[in-house]
Length: 282
Image (cartoon, rainbow, N blue to C red):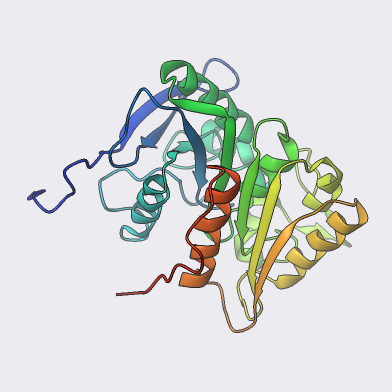
């Protein structure tokens, strides 16, 4: 391929291998560094997660391509260019491995990718790469990626900042995207083999900064899931930030992406972003 058009200081992603939280299972991911990367500096760490179902993985397997034709790869690279080390990790419960690996999350869709595995992996990577600052760890992902929320709630001492776009509550989604991974719901009681708590039950554990983004005409991820969260955080006396977009469906328009960048730069890099920076689609 002709790479002459890439910036002079371009950094190719690095595939990495770690051990899962069980200390036995091999898991894989990738590290994305910003252009002009300096190994002698300390960089905040941003984890990028893709989806909340077991039918996809977070880590692109080729340069400039992924399950969405390259959009995820480019989005991750853009986050890295904000001056962060971005990691993607496919923990237990994701596809393209053996049956036992995939079934690790059966019964509870937000367990996809196993947050325990990802925390363990980031700690291993930080020992390998001292430029990763574990005092500044954030998480975000593709629309509907619930792991960003559960990471903040289950590991409040580790993840400090999170942005969640179009939160998907599995109780409210289409059956074809929830029941096949979790079992059916009967009279409001979830039939599942994996012990879990819903996000609103964990709202009191929030310590970090959280931005919730949702389109108000989203036909894929019901807004009621996000509104339940907002109510739970208010009841727990927790402060969260939110961006509700009146005419946006299940999408990531330029304004919400810019607000996500601003949020991460402000609270993860601890710097002031350009005011009202205009993102355009070309």
